[in-house]
Amino acid sequence: MATTAVAGLELLRLGAVGADGLPLAGLTVGGASLEEATGLVGYDELVVGGWDLDGSDLYKAAEQHGVLDLRQLQQAEPLLSTITPWPAAGDADFCRNVTGGNVVLAEGRRAQVDAVRADLRRFREEQQLDGLVLLNLASTERWPDPAAACLQTPEAFEAGLDADDRAITPSMVYAYAAITEGVGYANFTPSLSADVPALVQLAEQRGVPIAGKDGKTGQTMMKTVLAPAFRSRALTVEGWYSTNILGNRDGLALDDPASLESKLQTKAKVLDSILGYPVEDHVVRIDYYRPRGDQKEAWDAIDLVGFLGQRMQIKVDFQCRDSILAAPLAVEIVRLVDLAQQRGEGGVQRHLGWFFKAPITADGSTPEHALHRQESELMDWLAGGSVVVPGPR
Image 1 (cartoon, rainbow, N blue to C red):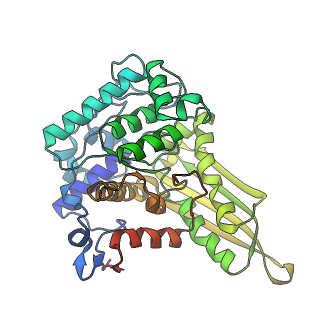
Image 2: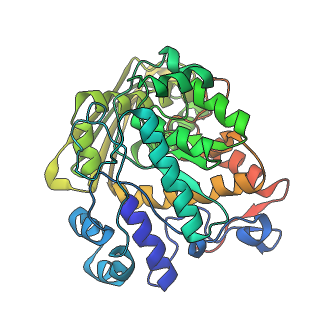
């Protein structure tokens, strides 16, 4: 997905593709473009770098992933072939099925943090950047114990880094490094990251914006559209069976039961929150099926009860492209976190919940999940009292 986002930005810059799939493209405020009215950075102003356990350049990665068609791959090659991932702070204990040799040479969590911070400083200086945002697009990690002592306060987290506490995950290493460098951070994965109390508090203390977690792209996005409609029409959801098949690298990561459990944690909580009651027969499955590659299929069978107790069914079969749905959201999240930094708004960015399955809340309260309400909150924040108008598509 990260490779698709980089390629997409380059194809946009070249004028080879339109802005389809980019939710904020073409919006206006008071007759001016969103960028002019708010200071939101333009797509062509974004510069990309990052880490990966696979050290192949992004052109080779794009060839392997098979998301871009041949013409797009050729057009993006001059840029993609020049971008090589930096050595990553990985840990096979947290993500067993996705490994590689491009690993940072650092002993322990504190040393990993120092290496990531050094990369951030170097990249900012080399590229002469006005702003910097770190977006976690790594594979899903298993969750540690959220109640671990080192995750409760910034002071305990510092001690945990020094003690190489195994409750601190690789994604937390990146989140902590970003926050301490004054770099906005967002988590597109289901992994526990900046949403632990220690890092939420640290982000608030440092005035650094954070957001996440788990990008809301396909099946869950559909749930957050359909469930409010059922509730508004007083249709009782008796059961909701959801299954997913995908064969890309994310699917491989989720083939590990520990990583899969992290994903199910975020997908399963949405429905009850929107409907206002528990759906006893809510089943969510994710299966790795290699032949599909990035061509994900999400299938839902919904059982409803209506007037006079009569039962009805709805079937939804979303045959989608995993990276094609996720990459434009990743791009928009980076632009919005940067805008929060420009505005001096640190801590949890609740208005970015529109993008996530499990949005962070500063006090740990239940977030809003209905897509239309999340969109209104985001647009209100963007416009600052003005009206955001959709542009032509």
